Image (cartoon, rainbow, N blue to C red; front, side, top):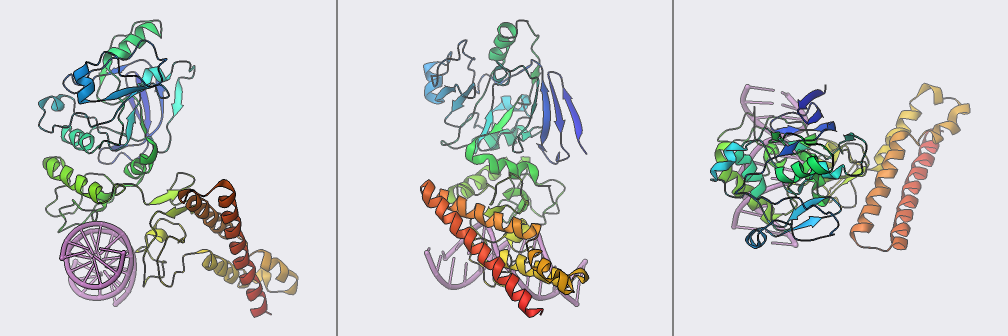
Length: 402
DNA sequence: GAGTTTGAAACT
DNA sequence: CAGTTTCAAACTC
């Protein structure tokens, strides 16, 4: 059930996934408002002109610029910072501005400005457009500190928004300060990360030895703090922000993509059967048909990335299943329906599985940097292979049941 | 609910 | 990078 979360200036429609500190905005309506960034954090005003493609942030002192190099991103009407902001967990001001949490790759858009030229007052959030708030200052530090130099952050300031309110919208608006960023969009490659932050329902963990600071812990792996869990010696919380930060850093050092979703999904929705596992599974005993298997658990087919043994989670299994289903169906027991039975092997599941394979192949080709022609060829070959499997099982099934 | 199985993560 | 150990979830009884 959705929940209407009304902030003056911004009307959020939030999804149910309001567990811990995560909110999934489904839609929002914009009216002028502003946010405040602590002075000792960063204080850069919005430029009066937005015509520079990438220029140093106006009003930033040279010291600011050295300490926190930034450029104005014309495409997004935002500033891009190439290094962490507000990284000092001990900084006292943060407690005054607690409920903002950004994770890796979050992009804060200078919200009012993005509406320049837009007449629509209502926008729909992208699936990955998670907003995290109600998080502690420690979490803010934690999350912001976890940004490394390759990530970008975009902030807008009260001043800039006030300017905009007064000039661009043609009327003055009394500033109201919200700790919640007006609009957060995920930057490029970290969409998956935030998707995992926001869309997975929070299940309590039961960790006993990892202190919930290793990827064994689902909460930690999902980028969430533990709440209402049954864990022992938990350090995945506000009280252990420093330890948590160290743990995050360790994981990212080991694997920069540690907190990204391991599922590539073409539709952006996990579990839609049209995706692939980034690294593939390594199952040996489960046949990839139990939830031990990450592919199966994510409701996707195993792919060429997998190193599993005796896998049954792939297209042939689906075709086989469909064949068995149709053959056992009483409607197809007579001769009249025998031909139709074969055709009925091509069920929705088979079609989905085929699409899944093709998509996986296309993604693989893209990853390998193949040319368009080569990618097309590889995908067609995969399609041929899929068809061959379907035909093979259709015929095999027809012969066995004659 | 206790014990077992499983495979990812972590370690060597 | 491969083999081993640790870990917590999934599963079974």
